[in-house]
Length: 83
Image 1 (cartoon, rainbow, N blue to C red):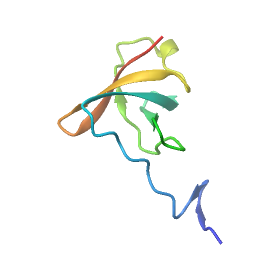
Image 2: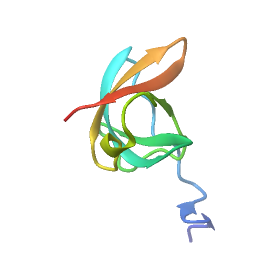
Image 3: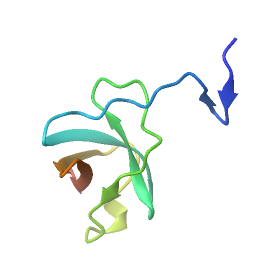
């Protein structure tokens, strides 16, 4: 039997972040506090929220959009949506 913590199975693991410096991902969810990402090949979006470029209008950030990401000093920054 699978135990659940909220809506997430207790045994579920966070999807692995890509190791490349620059990569493309899909927005899982968006809020002013951060963006969750669904990495290529992952079954689900992360629960971790990533920082994003707040200089871009909030109307461009929405679930399901593809985004350009960059790894800087071990941190991932969501640079911009691909429209």
